[in-house]
Image (cartoon, rainbow, N blue to C red; front, top):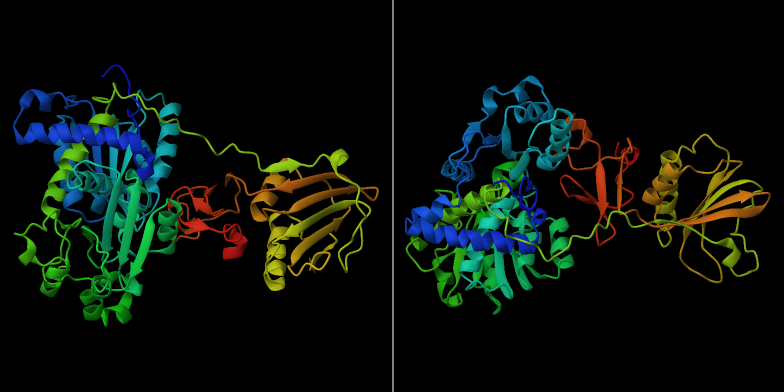
Length: 534
């Protein structure tokens, strides 16, 4: 394990942390290992073992789990390494210790890989950054890697890996297309949320979402699927789905978690369960070669896949569950540096985060135009004018947002005002204008804040009655290091009331929304400021 691979020491916090090319390599190795284990080919099996008693793998399951926990435990034991477990019932979390302090401490005890399940979303991403800095400060010989074994309603990337591998088995190892029906509790189901990005493994993707409105897939993930080029169709029940003819050959069921949704939902649980439970009468409507999958467990009283289907050709869920151990053995072998040295990626990762978004206008190149002043606005002699705010929104929305801009930029105590204009030359859309006489130039930091809180605006610096500088501001590719930013997801590790001291961090997506870097919840530029959300 002297030569490092691109996988060595990597974390897997969300499925997109491994590229499609990297996942295909992982699946190739899983296929070899599975064959070797089925044939008891010991030399091949040994070639995958880390076999280092000083290599520490730590399981930290702060939520109940059977399959994921035991699958990882058996995968870790395969490697002949040091395997530890944190007892959450008596752990330091119950004494008020932060995630960072707990895992920093455990990192110092020669633990290289942490497998974490938690109700808190984005915890692995935060710990990846925080514990890496701890390892560097304290000269640890290996920075720890983190594997997300399920975080709240966010993602379950290792389940996605084993699901994809099982889909490939049943797709004759082809990645040209897939048609899958996702059935059940799509609201709480982190395994189906991972598919919004995971199914990019396939060139052409059709996804049918089948759930009552109370259990429907969150809009964030529907948008991500469409952004990724998937064809997405939505149905409220299996009965409605099977009334049309374009039926998927792969069905992925999840357990309804109605106990999380209050008495009103529980009063309708029989109706909701019926909408997503397979019935005998549906059998003639299935395509030939159809397979059913389930991340398990099934509810023993009300399973969405009835047990009478266990001994039929529909059963793909048992093999899917077994595949979990093979996939996790290979994942640990890659992260541990045992294999992967021969893999040389062709795909280069492009860093989009450094794209410019503050543009100073060359005033010498601007054409001479007749000076036009918005109605109701008196030109100022010195100061700043922020123009084109929230163009196209209603006057009430613009006024509300201008109050936020003034607060974010610290302009509340300055003289001046705000104005809503209908534009010029017959334009029927509205825009906002903030003017502050005698205000000083904005610092670079405040220019960044303005770009984040009012993308698309124009900033004019006025000196002696003329525009001295003009900036056009676009939405930043990322925004962080501001104390007044906050994710609105209460389950997110960065949510202020989690008291973990995690600074908010957002990245811009293709839909020009800010996605939280921890839980991936998307926000408009109007929603990420704490003063807005109090």
